[in-house]
Length: 333
Ligand SMILES: C[S@@+](CC[C@H](N)C(=O)[O-])C[C@H]1O[C@@H](n2cnc3c(N)ncnc32)[C@H](O)[C@@H]1O
Image (cartoon, rainbow, N blue to C red; front, side):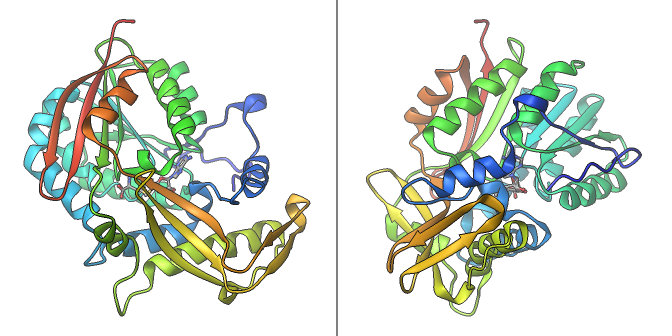
């Protein structure tokens, strides 16, 4: 995923935690050996996956992006003031189309450097180029790599007051243990009083969620996005998954308030993955997990984030859609 080529001159810095970083292949192998097998969210975002995700955001049934955009549009000034920083780092920035709404206000309040973080280098390059051309006063430095490496880079490259933002409800794509790890890393990057803004989808009717996370008639963006994970395994690790052998779908589990993206086997399947040195067996009807989307309740979220040294400061919630932006400040501990 990350060739050793230099990105000098493009305003993109490759980030790595060096010897401590768990290699990508190890992460993928370990997750495929869990029960049920799963794949890390970042594996799905190559050029094809990122483009498919953009298509998902435009599906008539996918409310998350529209609601978040409207919240940012209506409250951009207030949020920009509350962030109170000269540097904004965004985890999983993607196209950064919504972030622009915030940046154009921030830059009118103070000199602003934007540090988008993403594993998809092409997306990072193009979103950075678009922002530079549209918002001349914003300095953009893209951090190319996984969250942990980018957060370590931020810890060692200090400067103007920093805010970390995490939009697109991507926080909910991680398990509780992964979220705890990430929150600890984020807290270690911020000084007392600095801001952490995240968006979260709040729990709601399971049928509505399954409608949102499956393709409406006449569309295939979700199905193609989920199947792209198998294409990635074929390309990167020489696996021989036949895409038609798996049915992509999303199922809601009320017990864990989680929508799960699944690739369900139509028949017993045994697939060698030579590049990882493993063989994956998926019996008929069983599935490979290609993504969690955890749904939160407001109190639980405040408690979860608060456990890592954050104090809730403000929130902007669409109560009808049950989706919100939640602002925390790092406490003095
Ligand atoms: C669900 S998309 C959200 C994009 C954008 N924030 C939005 O709201 O439209 C998630 C983005 O995070 C990136 N991503 C996922 N996991 C990542 C990781 N562990 N480290 C860095 N980037 C990651 C993906 O490449 C993708 O661009």
